[in-house]
Length: 462
Image (cartoon, rainbow, N blue to C red; front, side, top):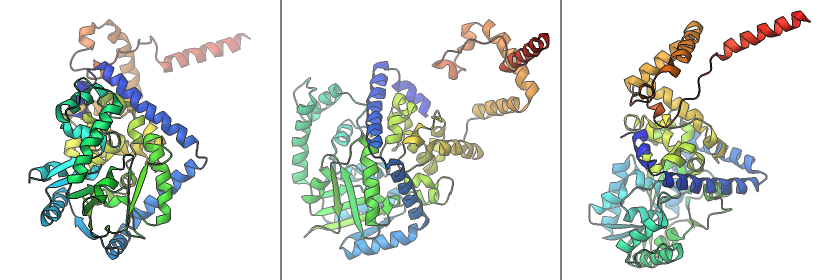
């Protein structure tokens, strides 16, 4: 099922679409206010982009430096080529420690690797401890947003979910009551957990340390109580120096949720006393992106979700319509890089308005890359025949002035005479949600010629 089919299912509920759109736009407006309150905002974006570009240009050196320093601090560093190896590595660590219960803070990498079902199939209980993640886990759904995973759900739906699984009062929808209930439920899970798994926001090569940002403190709880901490990170999370961290921390929370800083920014330098820290560094297709200079900037993403909050397509079609772990504009260039056959339609699910590029805190040229991916997918022969044929015909018409003028004249004459059933049939996909504009009697070129002649005649009469 492609993006347009899934989006069509989402937009059947017009009230939900409107609410989803407004909720995300509210976050976008908060982001703008926060960005405007920092005079050096554009400088921060430029510095962040340069740090990321430099890191990617010397990635092997910085990865070795990070491993050496993290090991010196007492952490054990593992390498995983793909999702399967990542999951096997995590499972073996848990198995060696006899772990039965795991608490996990938000990690898009573990979502990408489908770690939860992998561990659950082997008898290990995995509880997501971020509130939004726990809601979609109970609903047996994937996150629909990388920062706001349950943004597609209304409080009444969450109340019904909690009543079924957490035995809260039926019909309850008060956010404070529901949050308190979830807090009590998760506290029991924290106390009984044998291990904590986290993602990583930033890994610092110079120190070998990790930084994990949350608004709920769940990563801190999940790593403070159990003796075993496993941190899973894609290699793009690396930054060179500790002093670079301030640049990204100032950009991340403001871009993500319009906050001046994330509530908790936890720093880990080696395992806690008496505990173990394992760091699993994952490739899973990132090397392929790194080898393509035109798409390398994709790896600069710090997963703030700002491009989703501003994207008119994402806001109105919902995250699940992308069928991708990372939806929205950034997902539409990450996903085809990893599996072009499956995600070929995503770069076309964009208006190319450039709003995503404008808000990106690390200046990824998202709409240019979406356009570049369209070309790449055409060259790979992954575009449906009907679309390729249509584009060839339109391209030929646009390249020949006589054909362009003749086609325009024919369309302006015949379309207004056609019955509606002919114009808006199932073959006209464009017309399913749009009305054709009134057709002018003359083209712009004809009007220009006519007015030019009239102007010339008027000047001669003078």
